[in-house]
Image 1 (tube, rainbow, N blue to C red):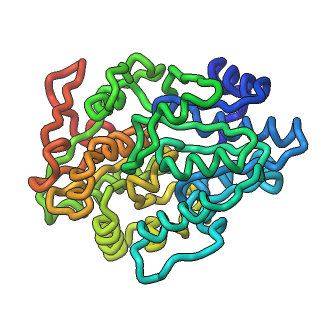
Image 2 (cartoon, rainbow, N blue to C red):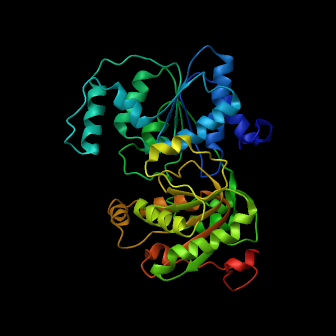
Length: 370
């Protein structure tokens, strides 16, 4: 599952060497699929093997915890560092716990205030923060107070949560490295993702892989969306490759899981996100996962669905001006094939997409792949 160090690009190896050489803070920024997670893993190998320190690896979701835990075992350093999700880490550091009657957001803000008001010491020689763009300013301040050195990786173009931490907050500390190549997906995926990017940088120009395969736009009626997904799965399961079925709405995922169970389609769906910590991410059974939990992951095949106008989750994302960011992250989880299931109720951002092939004026159907 883990790409060997020898197969990393010279750019990626150069960043790892610089992290090992420098002693100050460093922020590594890069587009989706540029190898930020790989860099974090091999950086940890260097730190653990070359110095007598126990790094802190701070991550933001349970799925990435599960994926990285598996990778760390593969590298043989799982017992030489502390890996923890950020919410649990800050919650455990609070000396006083808030009233249970409050909302989670209210309680969490009180937790952060409690920690910031403590007399914090430099507990960690090195803290590595993955997906730094999804931290809040308070969380970032705490990390810097407890760490002698902070290594942050992320991309502020991939923030799926509304936070008050800006790119400037991170770049003003220490050194900065920018990754310029995308290795995960091919140029046709990059073209599609470009329309949802917040920057003017050409994603297609960063991509090294080319392909004649186009993303597939599959239009169906609302009541037929689950059966259409089942049809796609029956076509692609023969490849025995990883499949991610992604939606921003967990209610949609839950309903799809019930349908797939009723038609005897093997798959994984977890009612509790914490169960993703023990998921086998090398499994080729389809994984039903939210856009938020899919961050940092990749699949050979991605099926995107459930971005419906009447969804309360989608309404909330629109209100926060985060819908396009979530679509961007969802699209860029694939390293090969992308299927977008659309209904008349799907948001216009997806329903208005048009994909034209450079070789034909006709849109490819699912059958064109096989």
